[in-house]
Every structure is written in C-alpha cells, then in structure tokens.
Image 1 (cartoon, rainbow, N blue to C red):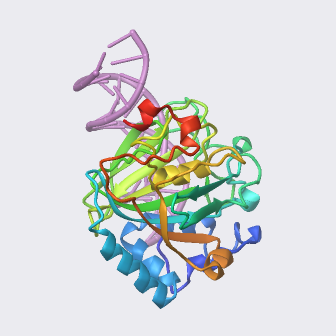
Image 2 (spheres, chains in turn blue, purple, green; image 1 turned 120 degrees about the vertical axis):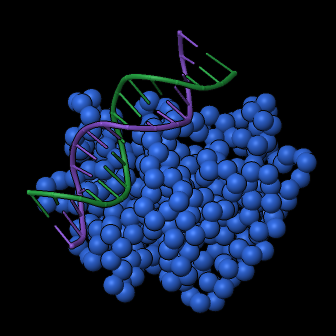
Length: 306
DNA sequence: CGTGTTTGACCGGCGC
DNA sequence: GCGCCGGTCAAACACG
C-alpha cells in the first residue's frame, strides 16, 4: 500500500458505482488502506485533495478549536465519510443504507450523510477467510476475497478527533478483541467489535503518530441495531454521528450539540462522494444541552446525564 | 458469575 | 519462497 505515485486516490470516488471494483489504479480497499492506514498522512491527504483555500480554512479551524476543550473531548473533528460500495465484490453490508441528519438548535447547519452506494449484495454470502486459530468460523467477514480479487472490506468510515481518551463513547457498546503495535507509530492500535451478537461492526482506534492528541477511529460495517444510549447528556460526538449513519434506513438521529463549522463545497463532495467536515463541540457548559430532541424519545434521562 | 480487557499466538496478504 | 505486517483468536486475567 501507499503507492501514491502522484495518483489522487480520491479522484476515483465518483457517484457512479462503477468506480468501485475492480480496475483503476487501486481497488477500493487499497484506496481506503492508503487513505486511512497511513495516519500520518491523513491531514495532508485532506489538504492534497482540497482546494488550497479550503485547506487553509481547515488549518485555521484546527488552530482555533484547540482552545475549545473538554476534559475528555476537545477540539476539532476532522471527519470523513465515504460513500462506499463493493461493486461487484459486494462489500457493502446487508444491513441497510441510511442517512443521518444532524442539526443543532441554532439552526446553523444540517449535516446529511448518506451512503447511496451501500446497497449491493449481502456480505453474508461472501466467503470469509479461514479463521485464524482453530476452526471456529468468525461471524461475518470483515474482509472478503475471491480468487484473483483483492480482498474487500466492508464500508469504512474514519474520523480524526482531538481527544485525550482513545476510546470515545458513541452510544454503542464495544468489546475490545485485540491490540497491536503499529509500524512507524509509537501508539498501539486497538480493535473493537460491537457487543451485539448480531452486529458485525468493528472499529479500530489508534493515535496519530504525528500528533498524539489526535485519535483516529475507523468504523467498519454497519450497525443492525439502535445504539444503547447516548452518553454525556445528549451530546453526541463524531463517532455517534457516524455510527448513527449506520442505523436503519429512515431513522434519524438528532444531535443538538453538533455545530457544523464548515463543509466542503458540494462540488467536491458530490464529485468524489467524500465529505470532509470540521466540527466543533458545543460550548463547554456545566449544563447539559437541554434540547431533548429525538433523544428525549430514545434515551432515558439517566443515561443521557451520565 | 458475567462481562470486558490483556496479550501471545496464529493466519493470511503482500512485497521483495 | 520468505519475511514482514495487519488482523483475529482465545486463554488467562481483572473487575464489579
């Protein structure tokens, strides 16, 4: 991986599913590996794929948001959502494609995230690699391979978050199943799996080797169930925002705390099916957000005020 | 006792 | 073919 060779991987991202697989300079998984696994390059990749003026904007927000802190969560969210489909490989989960609309009381922004391409064949009918030790088949493939084809991952979403804690709460319960040292990084990578037995979503959490304050979280797969509850009094962090994307179709989460500071112009997001957002947390306040929104219907107050 | 974490071993992909 | 590396497994352990 990592054979950039001057090729912009994101130019392969189009609204047409034909880009997915195979063909092109790299497969989708390669692109994602390239894009997400090289954490040290992520920011620069963003910048690389953005107009220079946008890059400056992001950097500016980055600086500004360093002062916007909370004990455990702080600063800017750089998030990337990718419309992602396995094309012929059928990488998409069989759960659902969905969307999440996030709005704040100030009405400053709506964040609409969708995966229009996530609709191909179920991953369940794809062969899983032989499991490691022993014979117990792992539930649902996280990577699938056919003969002569590169392995295909389920849809993945990566986030960069400035945070002091590695594992950010997102309303779902996770079980850690592994930790590995990462080459060229002093920080280990942790592997988590959703504790819901029917859910195959995984996520990886690691710190940027370049900026230890940045946590890189990568989701893989889609939740087949609702979250168990939102932490921190209704505030939902970036993970939850994207975890919500994995919710059943038509289900909408309401995130009163999220304030969209800027969004890449549609000309970029539409052509490449990439959304890069820089979001900030709400004002640090002793009070939890009062906007119950949908949370009032979903999450018991006791949980929200944890 | 149930649930979650730690950690070494194992396996497969991939580059050389 | 070999070695490196990422990802996963599962036994042991910790904790409430």
